[in-house]
View 1 (cartoon, rainbow, N blue to C red):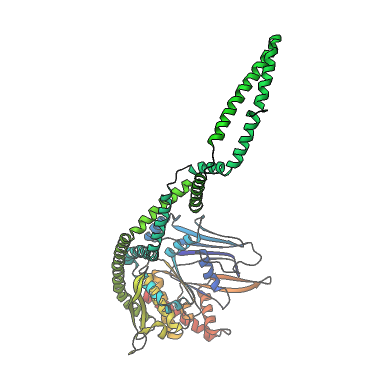
View 2: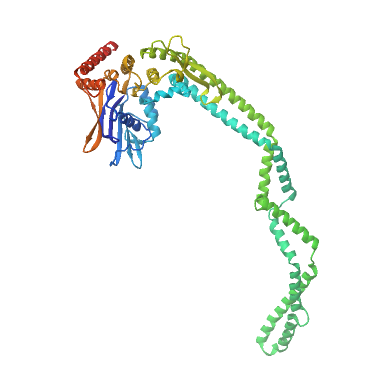
Length: 560
């Protein structure tokens, strides 16, 4: 149960501390006093979104802190599964809000908003203003039914989600394969052409470098022959360097006997003469052997063009071209076996659909069994809420296709008058009736749930008189098994309070401040008088307020 609430610097609340009690806790006050801020602050502490303007002006931060007492062993086990351990049987959830960031904590340990919401779902259920309008949406009806049957459904729904995920994944794969198959023949033909194109080239790693070298040589053969011929003339013809060196050697040899130093020069020059003669013989041989072969040049040029074309098309190098060929062969093989692949895929999809169909049918059967029980319990609860002759049922329809929820569509039907056929809620129920229907459903769900605290924010909208009295009695009954916190403007409900809190608005130092206080018995009667009489509270109004409080006491004694 929710033991305490501490709020600081939030909207109109400067600072407030509230200690809630067991049973029915009533919050009342004039319009605009800040009742919704209290519920809003609880929502914030439980990980809800922070609305703009919630931070009190001229303050650096706002703080909301909730203290829960964990009384259920089941709750404690589920919390421990999330690595959250009550300290002295309590859990403190807080949210600090500033202009730049929000920090959520559970027992002083920082946690995410998602974690806070998950923990909150175990401890508290909040029914906000106008939430009963969600009953007009059919998808909400299936959600309520699944909540009612969750003990039997939980494992099955998890299987359903997994089966649906597998089924959808295979359908997407099939759609992609079919799309791929439309151009399969064309792609096969193109792949075959490219594979053959590379295969026919008989590429050899490194041959491109050799071809480029040969091409450069052939392309420049005229310049090569001209330069080599001139070099031969300069070194081997008449008047050439060879002839001049021979003459110089002869002259040195003729006088070398006269000076030993000349013998050394003569030897060096003789070596040069021998080298130059060898050079001339080799160059002469080169000139006689090297002839420009136009056909050979054409073949080299043609081969080089082919290699460069394939390199440009498939990756920039012979290695890349050969690798591209391997990849295309693998792709070709996959497409060639397309028929077998599609057979296997269709078989897997059929198996997945069969599994999904089977688990959907099991989930549907559980829903239909529990729908009968829920309908009966709702009828009884509505009778307690002044629906004099009401009929209630759950209608099932087969959805088009599958969803994570299976194949069911469910809708609540109601008849509020004798002899009238069952009709959808949206075509029959008024706002006040919807709020009572939601109260009945919440009461039923609470009875089969471990959530200890229920919060109702003005669920009494659109009702009055005898109906208000019966709603009050229902709240009182619910308060016997759960902690109930209710914001109300109806004195009949407020009179049933086990703990009655007044939210008031005051101006202090030209600043509007909301405060909340626990009322004693006489103060509670006075507040009932205000709720009954409005601006002018007469003795007769106060007498009615006291009578209403006494009547509430007698109802409480009778119920207990």
